[in-house]
Figure 1 (cartoon, one colour):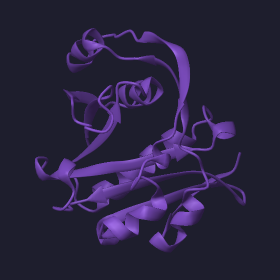
Figure 2 (spheres, one colour; figure 1 turned 90 degrees about the vertical axis):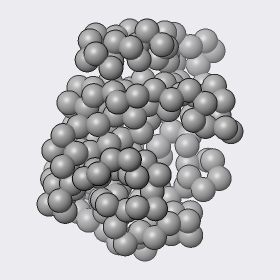
Figure 3 (cartoon, one colour; figure 1 turned 45 degrees about the vertical axis):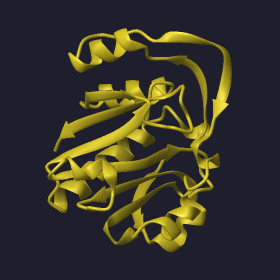
Figure 4 (tube, helix red, strand yellow; figure 1 turned 30 degrees about the horizontal axis):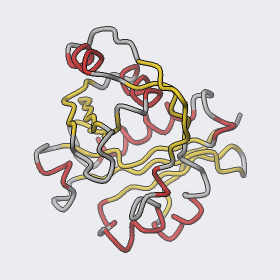
Length: 191
């Protein structure tokens, strides 16, 4: 693989969104796992049956093409990962934007808004390379830590962030009125 990560303008979000963000939910984290993670201790996930497909891009306002209509993207950094000419991933990070709720209580934070890797390219180091690029660019713009939001049903993402030095700040049941069965998990890593 010949991986190249480049910054792109918001006008390329339609191309960015061609990399799907969906995943199969096969397990979830319960209260015991949250407690272990807040202590940076080993944790276990609980199996979900039946498994199901989750695609956050399908929710109103969540698809990348909606972002320019909902937000001022002037403080957003949009990255694309290419293997030669083929787009294989992307990541978006926001630095010092007072209009983003998840940054209001986190002075000096950047927020990893989105990270995605093409399904056939997952588990090949692309996510790690994108995260490293996000951390570097956020640090260059003055961020001293990086926050990311995920959910209790996205165990692969939780494992990824935990393995890359993020600590679970808090779990927030009820954070999503339209998704009452999902728990918001906020992670943070010093840069």
